Length: 191
Image (cartoon, rainbow, N blue to C red; front, top):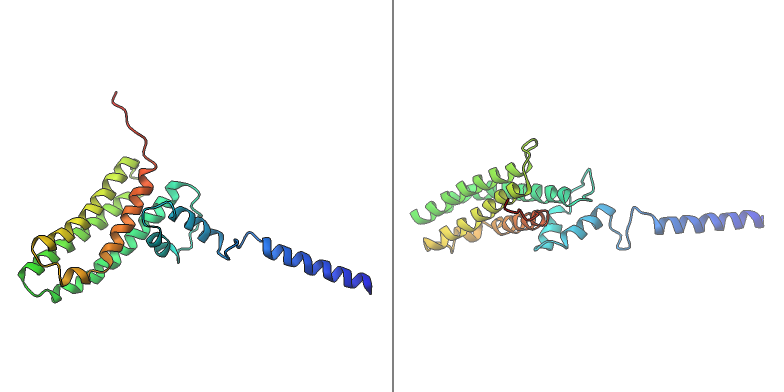
């Protein structure tokens, strides 16, 4: 009887130890993928946006290499760009005058270009170099700056532009992808 009690207590003890030390949870109670993604995100210019854009992602491969995390970051930027484009389409009817409509139409074309640039970075079989990816990401980010500048230059930044709420998040996610990619670049030398 005493032996059964000792065995039961030992079994309970080992079960508790294993549950506390289980690799499925970290000290914060997060899954390993969340902890690893948080670590990568903490090394970006906009870690809050990075974490929130990737919080519901269940990667098939944990991003152990920068190139894997870069792909995840670009995919997140693409997802937000597509959502923003879809959201912004209905704003055309909200334009109060010709200038707002022109700025909005320019932004819609720039969003289309941004999506094309992001697609270039992840297309399989393109053999894109980190420099190619940097160029495409830089172009995508410039598109967003140009969108905002168009409203400002036409003096109509007070109504439709603030309704383009995801524009800032998309820019921050592209900036994160640029920073991640920039860390993969090696200086080219002139031969």
